Length: 312
Image (tube, rainbow, N blue to C red):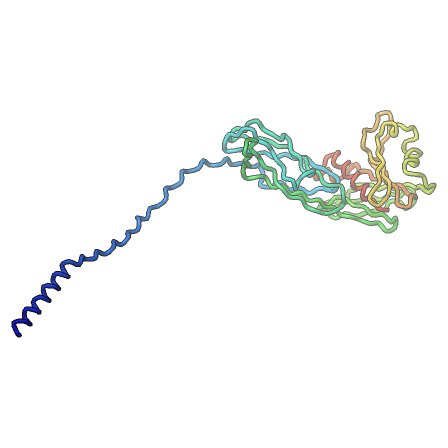
């Protein structure tokens, strides 16, 4: 019996050894190794864009309604350019015009001059207009050269009333005190708009002269009877009839005065709302506006706009 059990145990040991030998070893799967992190290639340097330098950091002006001003600015580019257009942004349409509008070529480091005409709307509303003037490549696709020139235009005025003669009008905003002096209350009624200079001296700017029209003539009839009896101005179309916002009629000088007329003439004549008076505005010979750089043509424009503001 002992011999038999020994043989059985020996057989089991051999069978186990055979099973261990026959079972293949499981090789573990390799652990994936992440790819080495690499930096992306540096982008190739881009060529620098041309840079524009303006003669002024910003163009700012204040105008009286209905008047205009001409000024100039210059620019230069740090690189040579070809086929360049000068654009005004839509916000300044009908307010700013530029000449010239194009350049066939622009040399690097050379100054180029632009002439700008600034025109204020004729309506008596204080407002401000802003936009830019920019240089653009005429090629395709179009390219704007930076920086543009900022433009700010303000429209402003001040008004004055004389209750004795029941008249109100507007005039340019000035840095010194102004006053309205009544010189005559009988026809022709005369008011003088005066300005006090820093020296304390008082100078007259404009004279408002009001004529009688108690016969209720139309403005054209009154003008022919009192200003143009020879019909020289009428036949030459020197004046144009216009209806103002308040319903009054006005004759405005829009043409040249013929030499044969032979007398000074005011640039505007305005009929009062009731049709009983006619007013005109005349610049004083010593008008201090000349001291502020206003030209004779600009003062004429101011007079026309002041006439349009008359309310009496």
